Length: 73
Figure 1 (cartoon, helix red, strand yellow):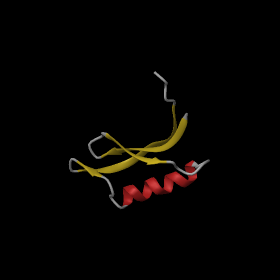
Figure 2 (cartoon, helix red, strand yellow; figure 1 turned 90 degrees about the horizontal axis):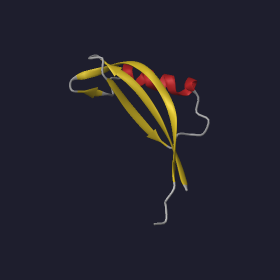
Figure 3 (cartoon, helix red, strand yellow; figure 1 turned 45 degrees about the vertical axis):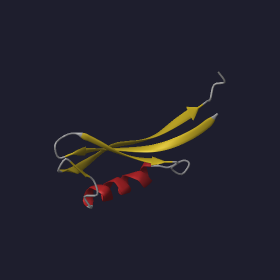
Figure 4 (cartoon, one colour; figure 1 turned 135 degrees about the horizontal axis):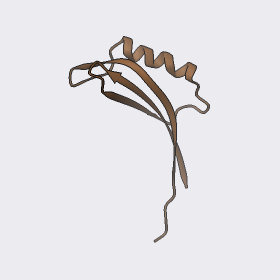
């Protein structure tokens, strides 16, 4: 069995649609106080643009854990 974590940062663009950035294997025990400034900088520097719309606001961030188990068949 393998386990992998992913930090998913969700943003809203100027058109009201959600956009996400995923970071695989974030450091253990990452805190909101560390993620929020990064999200704010992504917005300020206009790093993400999709279909001509810039990211406008940070919606949320979450750490997702994925466990995989190979089954013998």
